[in-house]
Length: 342
Image (cartoon, rainbow, N blue to C red; front, side, top):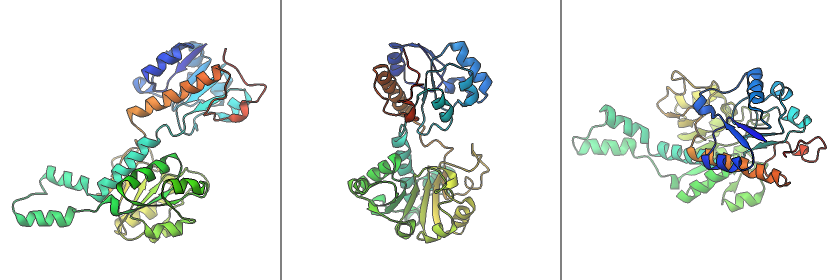
């Protein structure tokens, strides 16, 4: 058996996988390029003689699958949207994936943004560095206290839309600060809300008027596309903050921009944008009350370790004849066409 790995992978997990099969490792971050061309990627897989393919963001669509003889695919993502799941299933190829691999990373950045917004961290830092924030007497200190004093996260109400792996971690973290937590997610059982000491809201209209921070952690689908529009933003208290580290299309861009420019929202933190990669001239990036990052919410060194361990754990389960924990196409497990590693 041989694996071709183009995902970023932890050295310890590479070593563990090498006990089971030959491994050819080509980290896309070092290569500085992803495989988007199907023919090129199929040729690369064939040259490697790979039975197992482990990717992160390379495209493994039908054209790649039709031209190779893969027996297993591992995708180091929470949602393997870059894999032709239907084709893989029809060919009997199990597809492993790594749900919640970066949940802690995204949750921590979310809370970091809340703290930065609450305490005016970036305006204070910028003012000191560019010389606009000076202290030459008591009056200057009083002015700084009034302008930059901020407020405590522990005295705030945090509204979470989407109580999956990331939303739950955000709830846990902000509760540690003493914040009150409201959440909206019709798909999560009451027990989860109770465990997190979060008030369950049966509708957005119940949650929005009460929150200091509205933070979005729901998936993008037909029911969440444009979920937060002009009407929903108007329901937020004046001076509230919006954080979106999920998907840009969950929020109506024009409505959000209007709410920020008008002063209805005091600020926002955005890690996702309609056009990505985001550019410096993006209208949201240019607003001083917006904290922006270029879709780096899950970008920590630890995430590489998480995803590597999850994939190798499941490969070992497969080799031991056990069902993988994280199988994107579970129907393939009982299929007589399922390809087996040997």
